[in-house]
Image 1 (tube, rainbow over the protein chains, first blue to last red):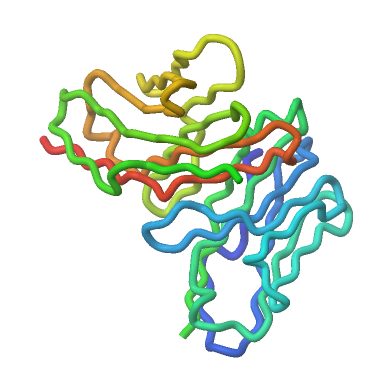
Image 2 (cartoon, rainbow over the protein chains, first blue to last red; image 1 turned 45 degrees about the horizontal axis):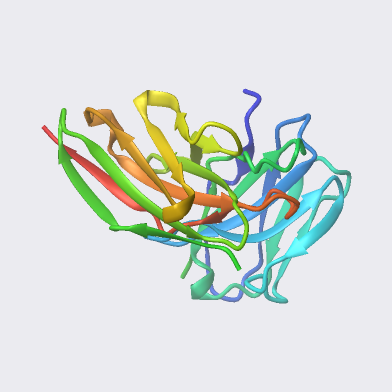
Length: 115
Length: 114
């Protein structure tokens, strides 16, 4: 399968714990995006990378959130000291920069439940 | 700042009936426009997109959408609904030279009755 892969697909954690999600983009894609989706809402942009550089971060990305893409391939999204409000689906997407047409390829998401 | 409004969080149609999902956008310049579909517990899949050129665009599964600049709309249609069309549909906009970032609407859940 050459699509966008996200792990784990589901994570249940207790409030205050740290969690980390991993995203493996399509191999030739140099852009990688993280989105958050809560029930009944559309995906909300969190951050994006071009190669290893993090080029934009949303105000939704509080200090407890950090994303990395160290070698310009896979990316991780870490949430420290989780809160119940962090419960959501975290979506990763990738694209190949071709005229900035915005066609993103999404993974199946990582669902976080904070108890 | 650009934004997307989808009219109707839930639309229900009978199998074989016309599907019409509404999307309006707000942008200071003509954006690129997209429709994505999301099936339960899955990621988003591109249905169709408008970048430049012909304003009526055709996508997968028999869906099409028309870009109307004067109405700032990009409504999604399908002449005849199928049970397998039941899903969540998202309209999104992207501005050129903004890193390919998509701004999504809140989504419309489509139900198809037999």
